[in-house]
Length: 495
Image (cartoon, rainbow, N blue to C red):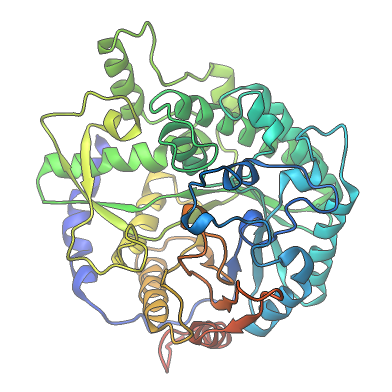
């Protein structure tokens, strides 16, 4: 609990002013700070069964009857980026972004998930996209995996089956070999907590399996080992010639102590370790957070298990995994309050194993998505916590965004971006956090998983009732374009 004691005054005093001060930071973002936007393959590409692409878990889920998706929506066509990528790049060019973060569909490259057969048409699509980006002066930032596991691999157990580790590395090798000369920024996984906890624990994401505190822990164990093996592969076989960099994107909300009591401060630290430390701690330090290990081992014994439900790394694996990152990507949208409890939930699961309570107050500002409370000061707190917890890593905000029901006059989105970016700039200026870039979510309205097309996050509106999927710039797109030109959140910045 050393870190908890270290941060007690940091939480209570240093950020007290930031919680109530609405003044935007007036310092210009550094010239080498990179601005971009983000999308994901299943959410924008469409062409779900064209040109040799195989079925993935989201194809399978969205075609179920009854469908778990709002309005029975699917990603079959989505934004039709498979056919309209040049139009997408033109929008990116007009925005003036430094980079475009997109993901690659594993099933489009390897239709069965295995590398015995490469789908050349699918590979060519990504080669064309990268070429188009490069021709327009835009850096590609490629996410290898954004939730869309090939269905044949799910059929043999998916991520909880350790056979998938080598299958993922085989897939990554194909992409490094085929695209690595033109791609210098890679992310192994997007939000593995959602893949594992939501996908295999809580049945909230594909493949919709309910096995909390069991399959989600097995999933994470294999994802982490796949990440480490892929990072080592790139570092040992491709980095020298391709001169790229590779990280991982983790999702987190800030967890704020609900009072100044030591118990609540410790509870918030525990929640951070269970949410972010679950992935970051092994990648940075080689093993799961100690509070996770002790809590889950104790609770597993009480439940009658012969060993902890949390898998263990061997000593060799710990050494192999430690330090397998060049930068840490972070997806942040919101925050919650946390307090200690004397009556832990006896059920199995990630939240239950943490033995703390987290919630979002009803009176906090809320976006269209009920989970998305607008809490800008959480941005500064989070990245500063990461600096101090993980030995000052390079951090890239790989997603941050605001939902509404759909309007071109999206002032709420502009206000959200202004305040969150101001908080981020504060962290860079006052706390000396090494933040290297920021990607807005999202370039355009797209398929938002269980919410289908009912929630809009885009800088560009997409007419999903139009066969052409017409794109239209929103007010926020014009605002973001101006930000990228001036690198300034206010009318007159101080260098």
